[in-house]
Length: 130
Image 1 (cartoon, rainbow, N blue to C red):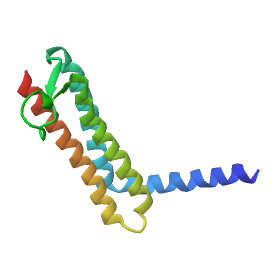
Image 2: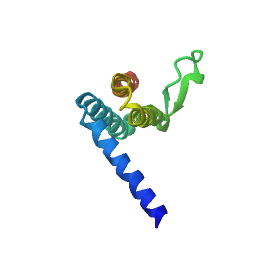
Image 3: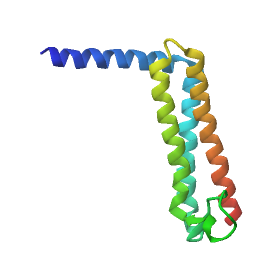
């Protein structure tokens, strides 16, 4: 019985902390913007797939030529990276919000900004090709 009550107690504390964090308007807004940007970029990739060639330029830090090219499905690494950054940052925010609310807000804003930069990069790559 105590094991079940410990799990329930832990879940209650997590839900309370989750509600407290997302009651903060800047964290909520940044998270919503990031989620919309990530989902929008995935949707944009799937809409553009028929117009894209089999290989797209993705690795701009490599020398010019075929080394820069990747399969079209590799474009999904951009929203996937943004989603991982969002999940990691929100996890850190949930842990530190009570003691460090300013840093928590900055982490959430950083996740939203990263997702928006990812959308911009994705749109630029697709518009370059089509």
